Length: 328
Ligand code: F6P
Image (spheres, rainbow, N blue to C red):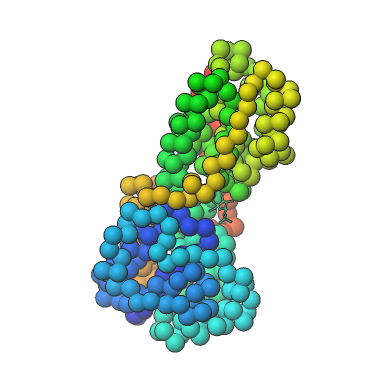
């Protein structure tokens, strides 16, 4: 392991996700383990521009493995999209002696990192942190597993009311461009139908499916919808549409919103964060740059950042079939 780098910066950027703190802890402690300094950068790239830095030793990350959110705070920086902003950020990093960066975030954060790297030849390693699981090069992003568990727990509660009142519930879950949460939590919570951005189910098929379920003797149903689904109507319009066409149904809507992004990370996310943080720091020490660390076949592997950004994480189509069979 070549150890020419003596100081690494770590930041969280974009939407927060459970497990980000566990990843910060891992980066800080891996640096300490290899006797290099670690600098925490507050509020993502905005804090880099403003020089909002803090030295982080292994004891500075005590008692955060179990915490949701991010102690370093997060932001989406417009200024970092400008050359001037990136110049300020670079001069602050140089003044602080930071020689490489670990960026914990989603594809927007990686895109910013890549531009910065191209301009200043600054070593960057990405850790995928978003509940949406929409990043290529990892089967799981940080926070995704926790979000799934949160959604399933909440839908279980909604099911109590659905079945007590013979109601149909439309439950909207997060996923602007990706249906991973909807598809997996939908199956886990026993949803009747799952609407995702990757697949245009069509309104007719939805009605047909609801009619079939009614005929088969079901008196209540749960339909899970990803916020970015392509059916062409938002969840409230869908409710109106179904009520107009199927007056026999008493329909309610639940939009789960940001509760899905908070809370203590699951054990899976804590372990994943710990593994990703170790690999991120050790990759920098190995002289690597412009890679994302991710989980593939239960191993932590490197994927070029460019590929992680451009490649699309595919949904598992077999899950669609499983969902169909489960609603028989
Ligand atoms: O973290 C990703 C995500 O959860 C998306 O699914 C959602 O559309 C978005 O964040 C909302 O984020 P914000 O409210 O921070 O803009």
